Image (cartoon, rainbow, N blue to C red):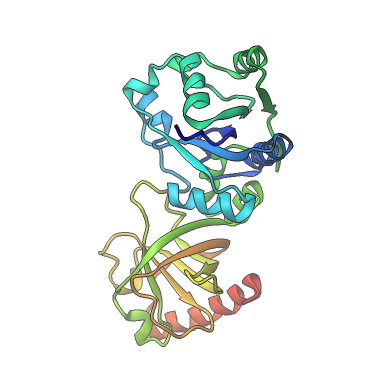
Length: 299
């Protein structure tokens, strides 16, 4: 029988991995290193509030982007997904922990101060600590982290992104807010104006930032990083009847990226989206936007 790899598990949903999560993840890595085991993140395949509270939740990041952030900024590549459904939501908290030990080799746990788990959320950090002590396992509970005048939370970051305040959101995240998408064939209006754009599609359940123009950094599949200007909105100058689009003009790039997955990091909000009297007027505005974006992105 194959032996299960030993782990220290960081537990949580980790939507919009922020500086509060960062404190938890760094402790998990430190504890795992001290114990000579692997740090891992145990998360859920859907946001618990969708099932427990019956309310839709627009995610800051999808699962793939959460994995990218965990690897890029925290060096954690072992991610375990726990199915969250009606059956597992009714699992007694003790049974949930037993399963973590049996299936994932957990020898330690790291959680936030407000983490709840198990049937009706009856599991909490205090019960987890006692359970671990009785079994000789490590347990770390991370206190709340505050910044910019309040406790850092995914809910707070979500509101900032919806309002276009990505610079403040990035401070709470501890890294740029990012979204990955597949490059699609678009309307070619940008190409006709000598500013070809990447037309992207994001997951439907992912939060779309406030409509407007952003200074961005774009990460290509081969690791190349390029500055960009990204428009999120409905393209009012060209009719605006095709739903929300995300279009990025890359600075100093010429090439074909159709079909590739790219990651857009949002660095600063430049201006609201608005209609221009002519494509020429829009073209001049894009030149100005590109100059600002180049200064911000360092491209």
